[in-house]
Amino acid sequence: MRCHDLRVFRILVVFFIICLCGMVISLPDIAFADDDSGLNEILEGFEEDTATPGITPDITPGTIKAPDQEMDVLNGFDDAFRDSPAPIAGESTIPETFTKDSPFSLDGYFKIGSSYNFAHNRPQPGQTDWRELSRLKTELQLDLNIDLPRQWQALVSGKGFYDFAYRINGKNDYTYDVIDEYESEIEFREIYLLGSIGKYIDIKLGRQIVVWGKSDNIRVTDVINPLDLREPAMTDIEDLRLPLTMTRVDYYVGDFNISAMAIHEIRFNKTPAFGSDFYPAPIAAPPENKPDSTLENTEYALAINGIFSGWDFSAYYADYYNDEFRLEAVPGFPFPVFQLTHDRLQMVGATANIALGNWLLKGEAAWIYGFEFSNTPDKKYDRVDVLAGFEYSGFSETTISLEAVNRHINEFASILKQPPDQATKNQFQSALRFTRTFINETITLTVLASLFGLTGDDGAFERYTIEYDINDFISVLFGIVTYQSGDLPEMENIGKNDRALIEAKYSF
Image (cartoon, rainbow, N blue to C red; front, side, top):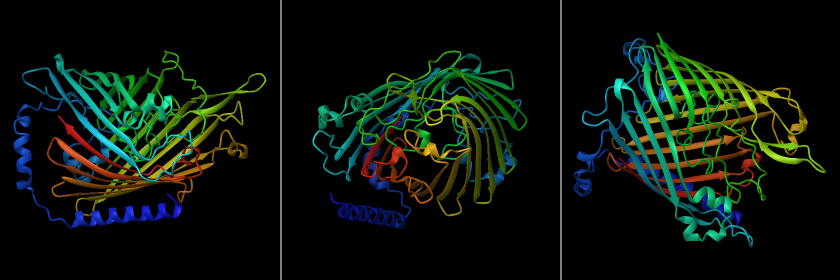
């Protein structure tokens, strides 16, 4: 497709989305009772047999809340705190038994989704053809909740997927790395034991996810769990976090929560595989030097959180490995040998939320030390990240949020701009999100635009989705994701990766 034709096509796509949104907005709030009657008959009996959802609370920093009478000012911003509320000091953090008859509860979901790439040009001979069907993936997640004596509980969660697109298109057209990373996968997710020691102390052992910070779209202080970035921009950060094995202790006193973690499992981001249309280079990456999960390499983290009337505050410290790798030149003969390495970093950060009527103001700041670069060996740098944003919910059934961050490297040297580092002194990123629900919250329209650089010169993407909850169990999603290439190395060649997607999900 020629560049002019591609631009015209993109304009038509955006026009179609705007028209569709206008049609949806103009729909009256009707119940569709007659249209759903057939489906209800088909599904009759499932609701009676469905297990009560298990309790798997995540006692995550930032979840403690003040008494109800002090939280009225935060009405409408429950989602900002994302996690289940921790109790007032002196009360147990473990909920009531979730079933009277059995200590076991099984829930999860089955999902099937497909992606269609519509912007790629015809490839050169020997290159992978990424046009048209790029994904036809089935996915299953199972969560087994176990109620133990003395109000302790456990969770065992696993997920697997298989993508039929590679069999349909022919595996010989893809690199070995792509088939290995994208065709199928089975892994354990969260596996932990949770309980209380006395009235004020909780302990959580095993694989788990910890959410730090206030931003929903950009990571600043949220440094604990790595992310699955194999298909960037296709879903939100909350669905991308990878669990880590850790020991976690939470202590509650008054309006404060102190959380300490020792992270035993060393795990990093899952990045696009060589040969993927998101992989930024024509050659395979050098080997990755991953530290072993030993006692010596244990990561540590500490958080202090407080929630008060109309505002909340958190302070963080972490000693951890950078989830993002860098290219390192190792001395060799006759030429240096390159490898991918992960720097050991120290982070001190703070976050705050302030509720003012329909406005929720967000702020995050972090000082991170320990960055290294190939062009200045034996020198470590520190970086200051500052984020500001807001969320507005004054319109009916509508939420608008805007977040922006600048990452500044102190004592930046111009040589760091040269390969292989290709670093920048200031890296700006922003994210604008619009969400609106219709028809008793059964339809959700979401538009997310993220820019790298002030004007998107470093790259950008936009995601438009409409999700329809057919009933309490079944939902369908339609969407379009568009990309713009930019100066960041990982964004240089993604401009042709625009795709349409459709998903159907059954939760149980």
